[in-house]
Length: 118
Image (cartoon, rainbow, N blue to C red; front, side):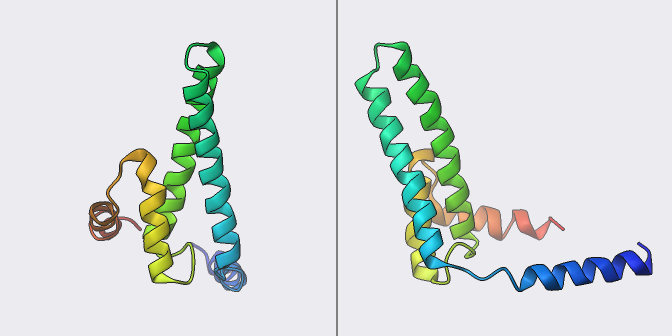
């Protein structure tokens, strides 16, 4: 890495750090939207189970499960809201559709996986 690129990277990090504030309102809106989409797709998949539309809702429900997992991941890292308790609550609910236990995943991911990442 050259000295110029190191200075550019440092300036970029400084600029981005100022924009990293946690918004509980935005976090709750994202969580609510993802959860409502999941519930809507689950309802559609069950209601229309005997048709091709039910299969489409089921596929969309899988995508919603992944979206909720990302919310749970960020909450588990403590980066979703400013509140540790709210992150734990949101993480647990967000992990439910994927049947992921929050504390076990937190231990395995934060304390084992991230030890080896750069």
